[in-house]
Length: 116
Image 1: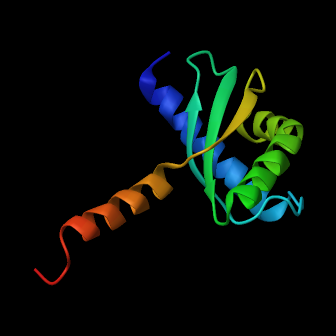
Image 2: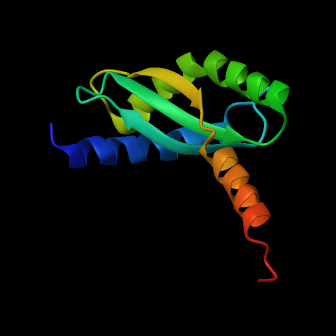
């Protein structure tokens, strides 16, 4: 399978999951979640869904638990909306890259103050 198709399917999956989170999934554990990426296996049978969310570690853990709880529903909806032959197994992972970027920015500000 071409890398372009894999990327297109990943983007389409991200869009569908974001729509489901906004409109269908009512789990109170899932807070302000932002999907950052969907990495799909070459055979489209597995997908890693990366997301970030606001809050402390406990709130992030609750959001992760809520996302994992909704995985079956999301899987079925993905197969239906995208007309996939196989519904992919979903793995939800917290994406900490935004937090790392914020930390790096604050460290750089300490090293090089803005007033220089």
